[in-house]
Amino acid sequence: MRKSLCLLSVSASLALTACSTILEYLPVYTIDIQQGNIVDQAMVDQLRPNMTKRQVLYIMGSPMVDDIFDKKRWDYLYSEKRSGEERQQKRITLLFNDDEQITGIQGDFKPGQAPQFKPTVETTVDVPKRDIEKTMWEKIIGVFGFEGIDDSSKPVKPEKTTENNLPL
Image 1 (cartoon, rainbow, N blue to C red):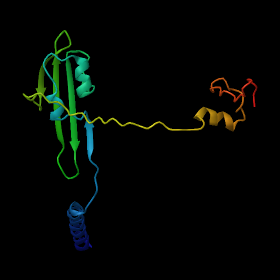
Image 2: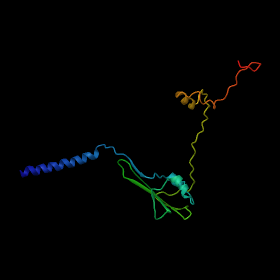
Image 3: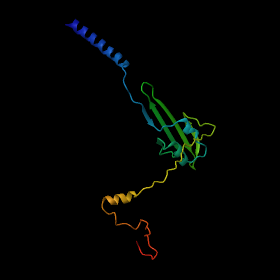
Image 4: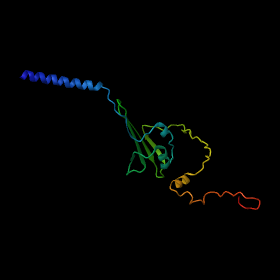
């Protein structure tokens, strides 16, 4: 009995360790997890000395950590874990003076020397004027049977007259 119990425990432990090694090689889908503010080098390159907090908010967004004890410090944290890879974490700290202007940048990103300008991708499209019989409001009113009530907005067409100014 003791021999069979020992044999059973050894075979069970081998089976369990074999399952753990098999599970490591099975293709399991894991989602990418992003946390915090997405911060990249292009955003940091747009920061300049003496920028106001409002300008920084426009470029970087609101800070992840807004220290209630030190209103002159904003911290941006970004963490990303892709499937099968180690978690990558980046941070940047912006320091402001009493006039709410940038005085320093600390962290994993360093500002670039050359000014960065994003090219505009705006396109202007000329839309031709539509020739419609009725406006949307006139169609809605027509559905409810109020078609002839509001005629004040329509232009009055001149009646055809004869030479004696009598209507035809």
